[in-house]
Image (tube, rainbow, N blue to C red):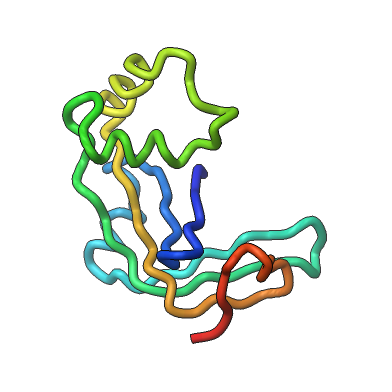
Length: 118
């Protein structure tokens, strides 16, 4: 799953498709948590909060499509950006934004501006 952590906004963004069960669940009850495993069994991070489900990207290059494109690391950006944005529309992609209220675990890098606790 493609995701991105924004420590300043305390938001985790995920790319997904509209037909996923998680989208229906989050629209019904936005409380969510994400667990990210570290390099070993003892390393992990958990982010808890309320999720917001975006609208679908419907026109290549619209705001949601650009947000999805921004989730990719610079090195993984597609050579043909327009084709990628068209593919996002065809796949009925959207963004889940988890507004983090609580962040904890053993694999947190506090040097990057991430904050812990409630």
